[in-house]
Figure (cartoon, rainbow, N blue to C red):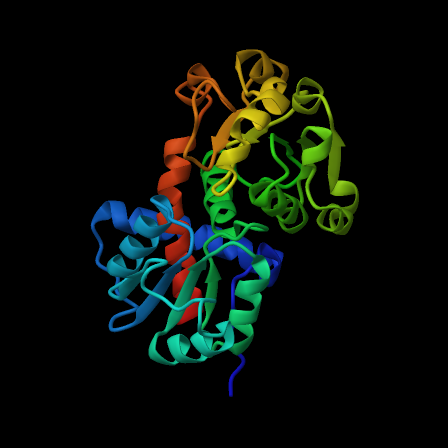
Length: 301
């Protein structure tokens, strides 16, 4: 059997392949704007397994499959036996035999790894507690469209050392930029993931210091899905980690702001920043569609 290709983290593709993927995403975006019909995935079907809900992930993947001539099946937590009554291995064997790809959004990263191990179709990580690689494809596409190659740039991630932070660490390795991470001490990213990145990652405790001379400022919500009960505690801990005008002023004059959304104005970012001239978040959100279409084309066709 031909070995099947998965996309569970950015490390599953080589730097060259990732660059090609970004270039292709930019091209597919242009085709879409020109109204060009391109359907390489005609009659192909992708299963979308959601243990965590999502707006952008569902809409971008479902739209992407439709535009490429294929079809996507939405499976909510109520619609599957995923890890509930049926072993993940069995779900993987069955779902992957009926479909041409499986997109999964779940909690433990280990679940998606187990699923991929037994899947005969490509598996795409649409977010786990550990990583969010599809978002990074969109972020990188957005940067490349506006600034060219990100190699050698200074990028600053501010806030929780979460799945977005981990994926930015992997991106620093694969796209060769310097990443500065400012988090409260007890919310640092996984030490193993940091260690693998070596000198490309620097940790800070003071956001303003981390933002100095930065070309790109990125943040994410303080409490991710499933952490709502920690909200008030986190609000106190993260209070000084807000991306605001002062923080943007300590970055480079032409620095860009990104956020994977949904955003809480007045918490991790102020309205004047996210709605301001340095923010590319709406384009970044749209690019989920184009970047994932490039990914689907590579994995399925």
